[in-house]
Image (cartoon, rainbow, N blue to C red):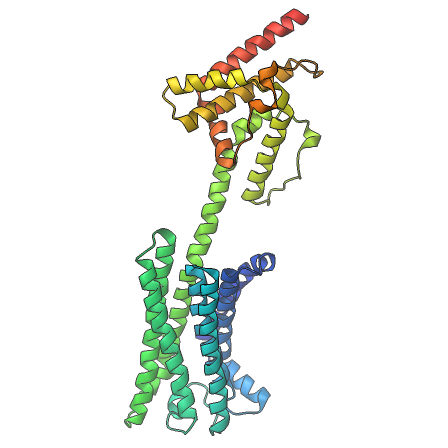
Length: 401
């Protein structure tokens, strides 16, 4: 009664669920995340309780021969419902429509689960069967209907998932499409599993012995299908997370020139929360943006609208589009303001009236800051403004000596 073919995928599902649980505790209201965790949990439970050693132990503990049969069939039905609910939430749409469809699938399979237990209670299965219950009892009243009901429920879910995922894959691109195609492949294994189960049952009715299909071939197909489908479900989510982390890293590095330009403005003790090596990329980007905005607030009195206007015109003449020219102009004004403040260590000198708080409108978002930061390092217009500001700072120091 070696259960390796069952326990191995159960362990894989448990590990995957372990990686998801921290995110679930932080965002337990997210229906997509709840659906993923429910699917992984149910998949692991199906394989664990379907293993012959577990079947025997459950039957022994309950004292009811073949008690594991409706238990495993109910878990399979719940797993089928969780797959359909996950696809519904994953595909998105109006929240009320998504909730309504999800509740219908859950209600339908809940009825199936109740019916499975009722049929088992009405039937008579006194001989424990660890591997071949489907074929051994396929002609027993009520137990026969229970077996056909769970197979029919799996068939509906299998074909529905295959059709939904395939149609959706034709409308999307990237990792999502790859994941959906993998799910379709996984469900083709599940359909093959159902074919072997039905074939074995029909063969028994016809007086033939094809039990090996149900007891040996079907479990291997089910294990392969579940693991392939799990990869399909997890791959797009994992790749999206990796893409978000990479995007945050790139944004963090691109903000460095602007952040470095403003580093001398704010004292070290004014910086935000302390970051550790394990801090997320999103948190690092948020902290760097916060440092930049804090530095700009300190520089507010030194912003000179004339510097920005001159830089904007120069950038347009150099061939920049209006959005890029705006970023270069803002960056030029910031670098000039940094040097103007350096020339006024006691805060006594304020720029002309044009350099009032209305001279500069704060950035509308990270993209604007990134444009400004890149312009800080790459734009000849900003370099020219930095040079003029440095010369003015030097002349100021010469006069004050």
